[in-house]
Length: 261
Length: 299
Ligand SMILES: Nc1ncnc2c1ncn2[C@@H]1O[C@H](COP(=O)(O)OP(=O)(O)OP(=O)(O)O)[C@@H](O)[C@H]1O
Ligand SMILES: [Mg+2]
Image 1 (cartoon, rainbow over the protein chains, first blue to last red):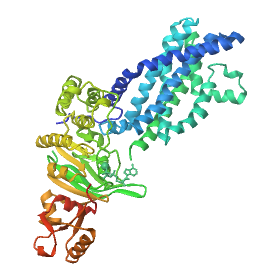
Image 2 (cartoon, chains in turn blue, green):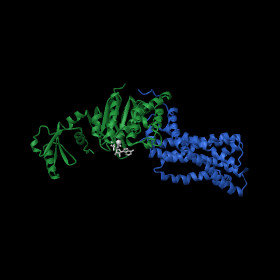
Image 3 (tube, rainbow over the protein chains, first blue to last red):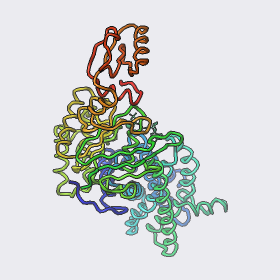
Image 4 (cartoon, each protein chain N blue to C red):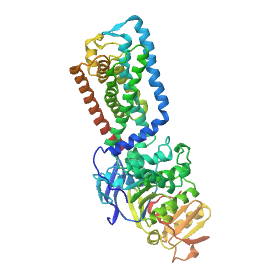
């Protein structure tokens, strides 16, 4: 006879089961993920640090290496959350039918999405540290505030992973991701204050950058590393929390439409 | 325990213009095996998905193990095992890892998980392949693993959607004996299939589905007696001759069916055999009933 099951929403066991699946799969490809998470910031730092760094030595009061080294934490967080949110979610739903398999067991779409997003956010939190480690080799000084960076990465990654899941549930085919990548993700990544300060942009663009969640991640990381600014930073955290909750609920709604006939 | 493990009352489900399930009434008594027999597109898989709330009925009432669906479907799913028509194993993971994820999902407490997974692997005869990745398993092994995944928590009710589709006869027989064992242990089984022999061998009762409806229901022998009769005559010959025999049978009120090069005239008991040239009498079977009731031919 089956065990007596308490039926509630967002049960930790159900979420834990999906996390355990992700972890088992991750054991098989962590090498390649880790490799690119180290190589990418190295390339950014070499290209921008030595390229631009030769032209501008200080930006917004930081050494250029410090500026870019902290800025690309956000890039790492964005890429390691939004792209798996898009692609692996689509593949698991459409081709591997993993979600169909899971939903025949006692787990609902809300728990499934939450687990997938939490997993990607955890990954983003860990891999968000990689650029800092690389930047230290390029001369960034370690600071105790860096211990906050994984939490900032988790919070930001949560929202962007959920955004990826949302788009993957809306898209009819993987090719359609191109629209979102070029018209949403690339601009978000460029005007976040990663490579150049946003106040150098024309007024309208810098206003737009203010609503870019990634910009708030960039600011938080810089402040964590070089000195917190409590009031401003609470506002940054608030923006990321609102973004995360909004994307999470939207992703659940759209994926449910796809998975439950 | 409720007398019926599954109750469907007037269940309907449409996808846009297509009505996949068009008002189904179906009870599955606890402890029995019901075969849901129907041709492609009859609505079998959709009916199965209604029972796990992976499809939500447009109308009607559904109860699984006493839980009302869709509201209480999570509690019902905890007590069901599901084997889908389409393979959805995690092919990158090992057989054991696949089962471990579901052992957690089905709330098997940590200290018992290992034992439950081992037992399911054993049941499916996959112990030797437990630590190999699914990608390297044969089609038959993957099917057995799918079954093991649905059994890991010892469900009271098993939903099998075409459990042996695409398997060679030997592997199919293996799976049949596995399913038969479960049935004898008292597990309630709802099994969809379009293999007549599968339904005949495993099911206590058969429900024949066609065009989203249950068109007949009963023990295989009853269905044959009721809808076909006792006997059929198979006639071989050139097409023109078969055509003629068919017309004569139909005017005489006897149904016929084509199967390959032969024509079978059904329900021939009591009519004079002499009027059927070159005919071989044989007992009527479930396949005859299936073809008569669904209008579909058998592969
Ligand atoms: N998600 C869906 N969207 C649109 N139509 C669907 C969907 N699922 C099923 N259908 C349609 O509903 C009808 C019944 O399909 P279903 O899969 O239930 O049949 P089946 O009896 O399982 O057939 P088979 O033996 O081929 O598996 C078919 O016409 C099918 O095209
Ligand atoms: Mg089907």
